[in-house]
Amino acid sequence: MEAEGRREQAREQNQAQQAPEQVRGDILVVEDTPASLQLLSKLLTDAGYRVREAPNGELALWSAQAQAPELVLLDIRMPGIDGYEVCSRLKQMPGLDEVPVIFLSAHSDTDDKLRGFQVGGVDFISKPFHFEEVNARVMAHLKIRRLQQQLAAQNDQLQRESRQRLAEIAHMNRNASASVYCAALVHELNQPLAAIMSNAEAAELFLQMTPPALDDVEEILGDIRRDDRRASELIQRMRELLKKSDPVAQRLDLNEAVAQVIALLGSEARMRRVLLQAEPAPAPLMVSADPVQLQQILINLVLNGMDAMGASPQGIGAADGGCGKPRQVVLRAGLRGDGMAEVLVRDHGCGFGANQARLFESFFTTKAHGMGLGLSIAAAIVQAHGGRIWADNNPDGGATVGFALPSAPAAAGGQP
Ligand SMILES: Nc1ncnc2c1ncn2[C@@H]1O[C@H](COP(=O)(O)OP(=O)(O)OP(=O)(O)O)[C@@H](O)[C@H]1O
Ligand SMILES: [Mg+2]
Image (cartoon, rainbow, N blue to C red; front, side, top):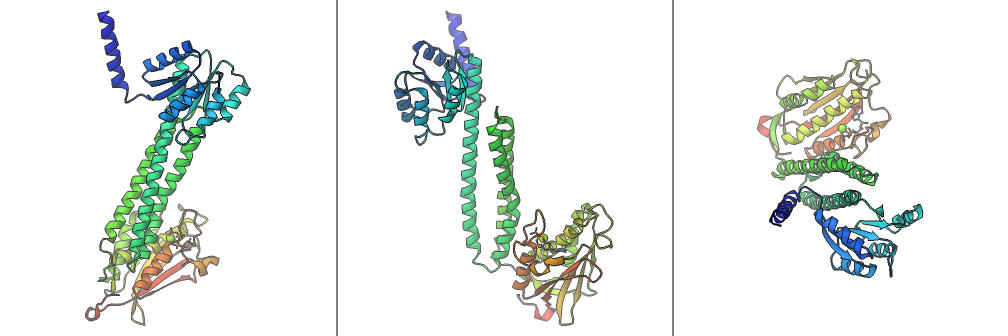
């Protein structure tokens, strides 16, 4: 007796230790045959579940309403309201409609099963049952339910965050350059948000499989968390960028800005096998501009030039950019006859073709993964600095996008 007591104690401790890893839950067992009800209830309790018993349909509904179970094991043939009716009533009760119901029945022909699924059951176990099967199905459905709840909670949180971010963006609108930053944010956030959406869709498909691919769903949840973190980091970076609230214009040399961007995009250009070159003006080319925004313009123009050559029929590995000339983007800085300082970004791609009139429209893109914002952001920044921007096809093939800013000689260095 003493040994038995100790064994029981050890078993309980063992279960308590294992509990966090294992899927255990609150189960309502509905069964009219007392012996079956007791047996099932004992086996489930021994397996570590919290079990509530209901000997008929009315009591089952009452018990479920008093406190929602995580799963219902439901006999079909019962006096009074039968299992089908209990299930369809549960499915109409707020808070209980999502609780998984597994039917138990000795009558398990196809019609019975179909009816069970029609009234909202998730699974069907034939009597006499093997407890291992009952346990496996209960665990699987509890896990699915919890994963669904996690997905729903993450979804809620994402929605809350995006509402909050929208409010932040609206607040940003008060300063003149905010529209540029909004667009950049939208641009960058698109990638993680699209990944989250397609992962959530994939998770739904995995959950609908028989048996549900739970390992895949768990992996997907990890990916969703990672993308969410990435989106938050982007917001954080953008916030830091915005801390200074207004763009700060400072006197800077366009030759240097061009050199910085070439350094920044050097590895990208090498990866795309594009020769990225500067043709600086012979003397410093001073303008008054916000350095971050200026960089943003240049980056967008260079990326577009490289994209234009990636799309050439010969592809990225080819020596030819698309117009019979080498794969090359050249940034030429110079002082114009009217005293403005300009940068021309020239590529050897295929030119603008029929798109020339629409290049600066927001969201106009011909690229599978483009947002169509690069040029409109660049144009907004150039205009805010009192300059102008244009785009031409080169007479010898490829395209050139240029912009000009008022130059800021030493004595007259002011704000744009
Ligand atoms: N150098 C270029 N050569 C040929 N077409 C170009 C060039 N630059 C821009 N375009 C055309 O103009 C469109 C709009 O360019 P924009 O930079 O605004 O958006 P995008 O590059 O498509 O997307 P993203 O927002 O990622 O930059 C491009 O999709 C492309 O069709
Ligand atoms: Mg672009």
